[in-house]
Image 1 (cartoon, rainbow, N blue to C red):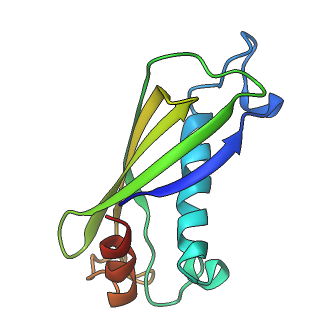
Image 2 (image 1 turned 90 degrees about the horizontal axis):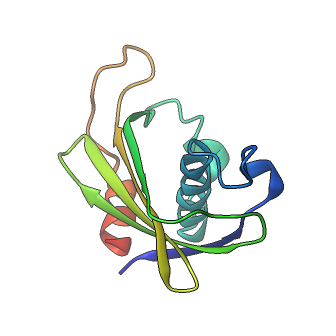
Amino acid sequence: MTFNYFRTVRFQDTDAAGVVYFANILAICHEAYEASLAAADIDLKLFFRHPDFALPIIHASADFFRPMFCGDRLLIQLTPQLLTQEKFAIAYEISIAETLAAKATTKHVCIHPGDRAKIALPDWLLQWIKDIA
């Protein structure tokens, strides 16, 4: 199962050529990630400022298969995958009218915000991964 997020490309997402600027696809994917957390009733304010853990992105990549223009209606399909007890990845497929436009991946690690040491993912986040994957 995947989480589906719909988003219209905005003018601010595009570059001088009128297509989605390469770095902005990752921002759009992050919007989908946040929406999936909110849909699971995870408090976003607490999630991103939690005193016991942080989840920095340690890797990001994107591949583009067709241009995306202002006004295009995107479907972002998000699928998380547990990698280790401290790490997970999220695969994104971005489509326009059932045509694959891009794929992206982010990898995240769970750390303690104080000493930045790796720690196990919280149980409720493991459940989020399990529910969507």
